[in-house]
Length: 405
Ligand SMILES: Cc1cc2nc3c(=O)[nH]c(=O)nc-3n(C[C@H](O)[C@H](O)[C@H](O)COP(=O)(O)OP(=O)(O)OC[C@H]3O[C@@H](n4cnc5c(N)ncnc54)[C@H](O)[C@@H]3O)c2cc1C
Image (cartoon, rainbow, N blue to C red; front, side):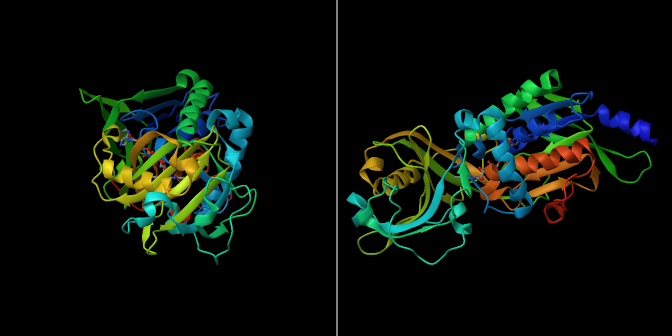
């Protein structure tokens, strides 16, 4: 194939993104903003089985940290988050701001003080490297009772941690992608992909993607041809590429409007009762616009077919609510606005070309850092699609997929 024919083919690519979580939506944004996109005839279709941000991307905490991992993605992602917030007024549009982050250990107050031991350990906490204990709360951490505190230790210094509202970020980023791409980006909600089609290469050496088939709101099947397919279906990705080593766990969360304003802190807590027995380890995030988000431990409830069908366990919500309430009057007397659950995609991140199937790219399994690492992932994906390789000196080698259809 001549160079000019290759260029022509690249310019006319039909790209299908599977999944309207933060990874799929941010990938659409970086594709639409790639320097070569505007002058190309590329057409992108994003297929989302439920609604945009219906999964973890709409229900996560939203921590963005320089100290997140893997460094291959985080080193690019934090800076990209800063640029996106600056360029598009992320402070107002998705609650971008710097936040302090620490580990807190102490006693439950109120009724929780006498409670039986509970289950602990959830997402980010399990991966934070423990440091020696400090003591005393920072002066401006005024929404936790000082009298209950046994130890507080900052996890990172000023300027190293920030946050977004993940649902707002994902919704705004797909809106910005659509504005930039115009008719060259189509977003279809209720479109569940049921298969990725392949064809044998003309020279008989290997395969390439040919298209995907989806059902629209459970009705008839629709086939669309594609030259590139990006699989970004989070914890559902193995349903289309079974050899992906993605595991998942359900996690519950609540959003509270606290009784009094809360300063910007994210806390990884360890709460014990009056008998020194652990009662819970909720992660608690204060958010802009006077809100507090908290999430609890994961469980093994099987994942349903659709994000829209995820069940919420009232017992898990009650336990989370009482753990959080035990820490101060501001939290106890607050109003619970949201009770929800979602599935964490574990086992990756896996980002890169699937060598055995030309045109198939995977970006999934982002564990507890998918909100943080979405921009780096999306930038890499856009370079792989638009330039055919990565421009930057980043090394995604160990994150690349080694799994085939
Ligand atoms: C409780 C909790 C707290 C978290 N806190 C943080 C945090 O503070 N910071 C951080 O960086 N990360 C956090 N995370 C992790 C983060 O939420 C995830 O890594 C990230 O949202 C994954 O995004 P995704 O787009 O890959 O997957 P998802 O958000 O799950 O999106 C996948 C989408 O694909 C769609 N889909 C599935 N199958 C198909 C199909 N066949 N066809 C079409 N569409 C399909 C789904 O409907 C879904 O919308 C947290 C996670 C949890 C559970």
